[in-house]
Amino acid sequence: MSDKKIHVLLIEDDNFLIDIYKTKFEMEGFKVSVCDNGEQGLADAKKKKPDVVLLDILLPKKDGFEVLKELKADKNTEDIPVILLTNLGQKDDVDKGLELGAVDYLIKAHYKPSETVDKVKNALKKIKK
Image (tube, rainbow, N blue to C red; front, side):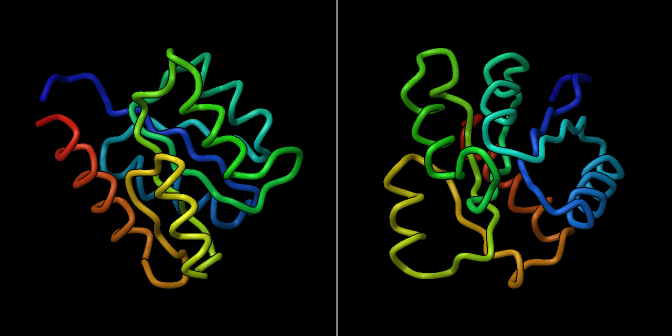
């Protein structure tokens, strides 16, 4: 891997979680950008072209499913891997997220931040192959 830091865009509206995840990813050597609503997150993803997007579903202004749909519909962002990071654990939500193009679906309550970092690393390894 090159010296370029992997850029993670975290779209999450819970400030407490933002701080935890941001700190954890930065400790692991990632570059982290943060947005607290779907509209801004979508704009940032298009502008910054992160290596991976961590996306909550329940967001102000535009929900995660809508953001995911729009990212996958845009030629410039369709290849950015999106991992949904949410508390919505219903099978329907999981299926919908994966159908819309998410590479993984993490339920916040089931994963510690360090495990989330590992999931992101694994997802990126799969994509790089």
